[in-house]
Image (tube, rainbow, N blue to C red; front, side):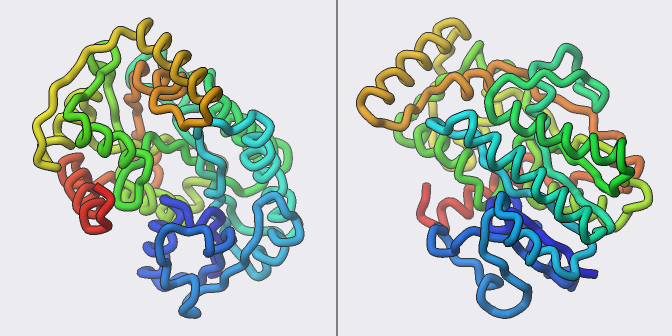
Length: 332
């Protein structure tokens, strides 16, 4: 069986490829130029898999990547970052998904597994958030992922196309540069600003556990086809406790600073305005305030019941491995 991984050189894609290699799958990857990578990936050059360099929005490259492919893991996406225009999110996340689905249908692949985000559900009205919770995405990134989900759901419903949707919570682990930014600031300043006392609940997923969930959906295809699943970690804690635990593992003492939600929004608007004027990348943004002022607690019972997958990595273990990787890479 040949599998194709889009977004293979990204944080989650790298981990998925390595897990697939361990299981001896025949792998093809669609990747952007390796010259822009911050790290070395031996499998891009050692002949263990087929590498196609190109963009997910380029139908000709996608067509080549799909040659002989049975299963597609569609991970390629433009993540939420400061300064990205709404149309850029739409081009990569929505149109790119359209191209992949269209080309996959032409060659009759056995399954497309689309990686989405629990962010499409927006602010949870009930806890834990279940797969049937109404979707109300807020940020441009979340809206683009939801629009892409609708494309996948449409082709499932109207054409009975073999697809599975995975909504992952916040993903962390070795190679995660998003969490790294916050830990660096925390280490430098020895202060932890916590929105609304940092009391919002958080249920992140370790990247290795997510990779296993994706593979389980492929290997348990008969159960997963046509389904949408939530993939979340096995522990829930407050944001404040998460970062205090991180500080303890790093080996530093920090003081928490309570920041009311209203004040945080004002700070974000000021910071973004100054960044636009001076050309900086803002530390505090409205999308970050949105993230830290929500509860992120989810019910992932459906994927467990259908496939037998279980998240294995505890938060303390996952954070320890992540921080050790940062230190070994001299990033923290």
